[in-house]
Image (cartoon, rainbow, N blue to C red; front, side):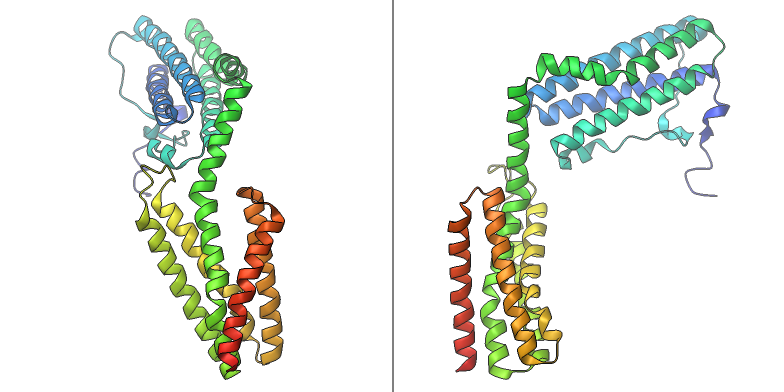
Length: 325
């Protein structure tokens, strides 16, 4: 037996009353989810928040019609049955995950909710012989499956092109602040700051294994330091830069990768072959940094390239001179 599944009912075993009760509780849950989406998005995406409020109102109307039908057929007492009580029934993601979802993902999640609800009502309509109940469930299936049209109508009312563009710009800005900016800072730090110790060790010892160990230690240490520094420096509440753990993760991982890129070639036993490949990797890293600055930070490419390549060349030269001396 799998814990938690032995007590679940199969959908085919539900009575008509239980199917109606399941539909009522599902509509209630969906309305609550849409309202929490709206509350989550209200400050940054007011137009989309109004769409979710309207969708919640629709779910309330569906629930009211289902309750009226249950009252006519079975009386006032509605059995307590929810999605988690039915084996194989579609599940909803925990609402707290909405805090970590980007705007497009929330919109896509809402579309999936409506599609799954439509499929449920289609199956439920096939399970009843009562004409009025069957008609209601069929109407609700059509309403849920036709939600794309309704969403377009709501979008025309609440989400104009200007509003959608503004919200998309805000979502892009949040992505840049939470992921790109910390990751770019980490990549720059890892790629540039580790040049001196790695190449100083390389030219001082001409021992590839020792150089690799120094490079790996410098890269991992810098990654841990940058990750914790980024996470601890700003909780994101006032600056709006997003979760400190996300920013710390992006910064730490990219710092370590930036350093390991030109440390890994020193796994090659031949010193000059390893050093030549490491230098090529360094220039690839520096040009990648310049491209990211141009793509996401809107820094002119030539200026970004000049700054990054010049800085990297100076640090490399310092490491080579110190190691060679």
